Amino acid sequence: MSGVSLRDVQAIDVHCHPYVANPNPYTPEEFVKKLSLSVIPSSGLKTNERNKKHPYPGTNMWVQILINRLAKYYSCAPELEEVVKQRNVRTADFREYTRELFRDANIIGLVMDFGYPSPPLDKKEYTDLCGVRIWEIYRIEPVMARLRGECNSFGEFVEKYRADLRGALKKEEIVGLKSIIAYRSGLQISEKNEAAANEQWEEFLANERAEVKAIRDYCLHVAMEECTEAEKVMHIHTGIGDGDVILDKASPSFLFPLLRKYSDTQVHLVHGGYPWMEEAAFIVSVLPNVYMDISLQNPFAGHGVERILSQVFEFAPFDKVMYGSDAFTVPEMNWMGVHLFKECFEKVLNSWIASDYMDVETAQAIGEMVLYRNFENVYRPFF
Image (cartoon, rainbow, N blue to C red):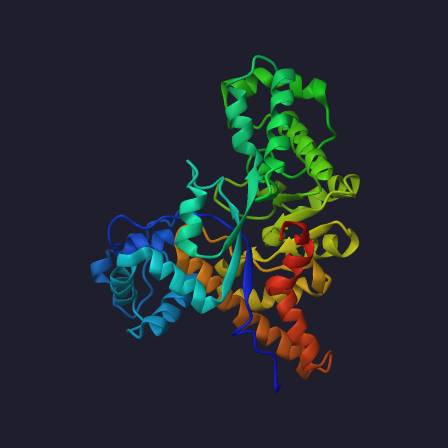
């Protein structure tokens, strides 16, 4: 073996979302919007005035890389219009197209957050679409929103909320809970305070999306407690995401006191805290119960994935990091996520070999650990 090769290594995507076939063929503009994390602002340029070799309005390096790679996969010109044209032909059988992409990337399993999009998609239908094994995480915020309208007091709400989480965690296919508190009140979690939470009950009743920090913090504590009891994993969104994330309170460093408090709870830092991935890497290096993934930053940071992987492993142990994509609208996100990750990680691993930090066999083993073996070890009870 002359160097690391990850091309044929299987992958388990530890964080992504479901999607359905587009009802009609996409226009180039629609496809670009589907690839965006949030909202692509209008550039003011009329697309019919654009030179086809110039970037399409709203594209960035992630979109550019995907267009180029799809063009090679389709054997067509590396131009958005031609790529979308070819895609529209192939997606006539969306199920077979999706499965073809998954086979090409050697994706063998997905950890799904069915809490987005809303209303949730059918798990059986999505499993049939992909043709791979699916594990599920149960998002707590929709539970809070639903129970808010069913309860007459905060005390009743807490009782029903805890019972709901406990019931979900008893299901074999659910491997843990997930919170997106970073979008609601931020990751600076206060101590569990029932009196303070109770004072915010009326505000929460009036507005499901209200900050009501004491209530949200309280509910996260309950979720941590239930995961501990069930011996399942708590997933917490960290770092950037959609445009409504509370960015100044999204760093994983804010979670450090909470993570130390719940030292018996396995915690999965979703998105690895990007762009604060070095903080996440430090946290997983000092807290035995905490893990991180490289989703969202991979593939949406495009060529930056190579830099990110190098930085993460400045501190993170090799057995504490897992592959992910955060795919959420089209199967090309799952597909490109794996290929881009492998391409970038190969470069990093081979640079370590060239620097005489390790031999080829060790580097190859590290690549396989991050792509699927670490997930198997962390989530072994669910196999």
